[in-house]
Image (cartoon, rainbow, N blue to C red):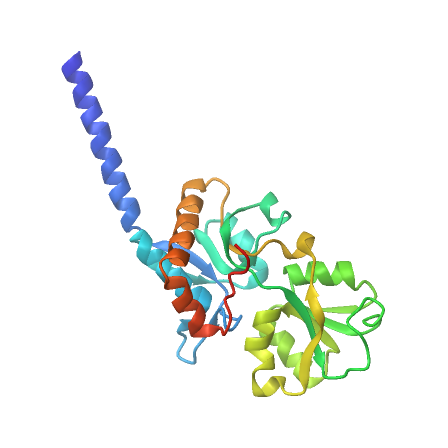
Length: 259
């Protein structure tokens, strides 16, 4: 009986080790947007670039897994994760209590505030009263849609599939203002030729209920082991200087936010 038990233990241990080895070498399928510069965008040859993309590749390298980037339109991100189209989302997704009802998150990997953008000296203030009756553009199914509906109920809310479409309509005059991440607004519009004549309207939007506590990697609730591994990697990347190198490649300030 003892010999048989030892054989069973040996076989079980061998299978466990084999399973771990297979898992370590498996591809990590990462949901990305590819339409949110400087965090993610697509080059003319189809190559994906950006801070989120670099982060995804670094995470895969440290996990010892092939990185498979799966492009997904923003408003379908969470349904696609739940449908197991990919294993995690690395796409500047804010950690909010509403989203945590459906999915889970790692610790944050950056945290920047939201701000309004409009033409310089637009003739109205970035307040609920100032935006009453004005066309306010936001990307659909984002924390910014949540804040816009909550803070500017009198505005005519115009929803878009991508942030790039928001910038196009703001620049062409089809919008009076827009609400988005402040860093993306500066790097992806205000600092560019298209953004000349525009500026931030008012200060940072303090709305934790909608905006959350920073951006994290999203996973399915049952994937707690992956969540914890990814959280540890974020801390390691931050601690060993890799984060600063990736950060400084795209931004002039540390986007991590307060520890």
